Image 1: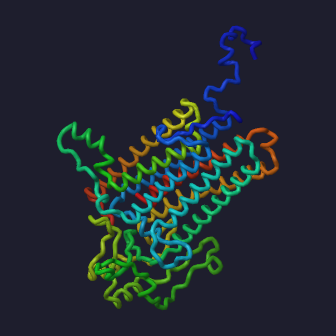
Image 2 (image 1 turned 60 degrees about the vertical axis):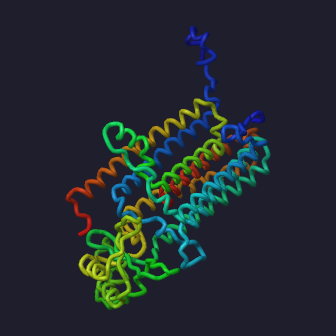
Image 3 (image 1 turned 135 degrees about the vertical axis):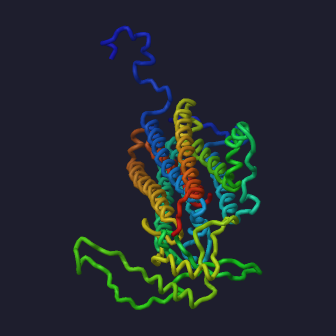
Length: 333
Length: 147
């Protein structure tokens, strides 16, 4: 190396190679730089979410009213509980990961194996919970009517609970009966093969209107947030007029196009951000499994260091770190 | 690897752990407490925290400067400010103790953390400012959004 340029002799120590000014190995440093760029990607998504939310600050869905479900506790409204559980699972799997790294420093192979195993289990529980959360969100619970302007009208009624009038949501199915319609769904087998139509809505807007007329206690709630930070509930006359004049179609659940909880953008960002994060968790689990088997067959024991565990550990902690922010900005703020 | 040393104190030396394992459990306890506080606050939403804790300053240039400086207190519900601060505290402990940033050299730490924080703050400022501007156009301009 020194044969071409002889005069660098005095700088040999610094520029001769093999010098580590950051006292960190190449692999670890590259993992850090990847994490920086990935952090910027995620913050791009979250900032875009903030942008859209600021844009529709008075019309945005209230996350507490959207994510209220917990598995096996059907019909109960428990906002945040399940997400808190998911957060805890992820933090816990972060802890077992850092314990695996620690055991790796001490060259204790069996401890590394067990801690990595628990980390993988934690990640799997988290991804499963995420899938359940998606399924619940896609399925929806109360149903709503979308207006011509693309806004959402939800239904509910005032109930007296502990001497206080509280607005409780009512499912559209509970007061509406579907009328017989002649319209048939367009399927590609009986028409143009490249044109397909999604499932027809369960009710037409006039069905909902008839149901609403027959139940005088039911009122419409709009997307607009009032001074008390709650969604505006319309009077009975205004409720009927809204559905009659502006109602376009019945929607239930959420997808990329419509969202019974409010702005479709909310659903889009939910799918995009939690989906991208879930994909990170999934790939983290896969990488963890690979390293897990490498530990078992003794690759790092022969290599006499467990730095690989440390590198996937960094990635795994980063996934946890991102979730901390997603949790705050999607579910809390 | 055997000589790998960990810095074992958190809270600027207020708590010093005996071993790295003990520190990990200590940090887990801290993170769990913070998450529990967030969930409790998020579920009950105390009415006293649902408004900003300061009102905007009135007047000229200095008032404007103070409004920017204290924007977190003026334009944000206290509850949301608490959530954001707690999140950053959690992020700090995950990075410093789980990702061992505490044990890296100062230069590696700075080049990762400062770069990220600068770029994210810049991005957030621009996008949120623009979002707020568009909202004001929708609200004050002749734009009808429910028809």
